[in-house]
Length: 318
Image 1 (tube, rainbow, N blue to C red):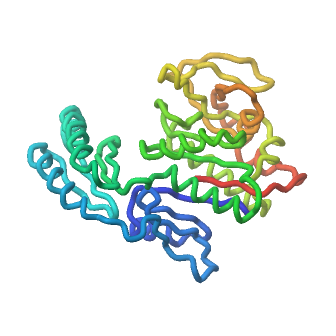
Image 2 (image 1 turned 120 degrees about the vertical axis):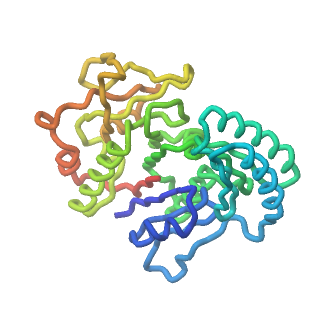
Image 3 (image 1 turned 135 degrees about the vertical axis):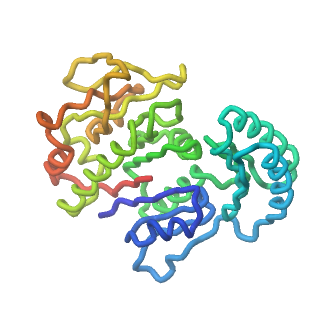
């Protein structure tokens, strides 16, 4: 198949090689894109590449000294050297006090490191200092630019899924591109630059497994043409960014619009709804209640019925 799949992670190169290095054809980006490789196992030059060659890392000593002060006065915190970055981990600290200390440390480091080409970022339970211009959004741009240059045309389908604060960079980048056939999905119900969400990792796995089975049985890429031919299935609902809350209105062609309580309803992803959203002129809130497996056709059955009518350039999954 001609779909390109990339895993973008904040973890170090060694961690990714250990867990995913053996997956043929899988692109990997470590440390938010500081290091990456395409995963073309058949190529001799499929080596890890660095986006910041000969980068001055003298900032690390200063950063470590400042972080050490906060580590000594904040129980449960520690400093972690992560390749090109330095992290102050406060996941084991008192949640409220840890957040307060992280905010103060963020302000201190921003001032101290002003003359260095680095950026200070605060995640869910960590604070990170890393080279400037290294994030998942920049990495997605690098991947798409390379692919579009090679094939001479834009990528015709993009599915981007993430659950961390660092994933917001790639969500924002893809939304700024304003490509009609791009779908950004965050995991969990929370404010995000992503336009849709899946409830949990199990739902992500359900979608990925279904896509894998389609590729295996049909031996072809999963493209927008396939999406247009599918029947409608539940899709993650859109996020209402203007209020920072979840939009509870649901929409799907041929089925009446209804409103459901988030506490009593569960939602899963639909490739067919992606097609509907891609052609809509206005933002849509997508999603329907999940139908019990005893009365619903499975993802695999829907994907297995894809017609062989057209052949696009392929898609990319993050």
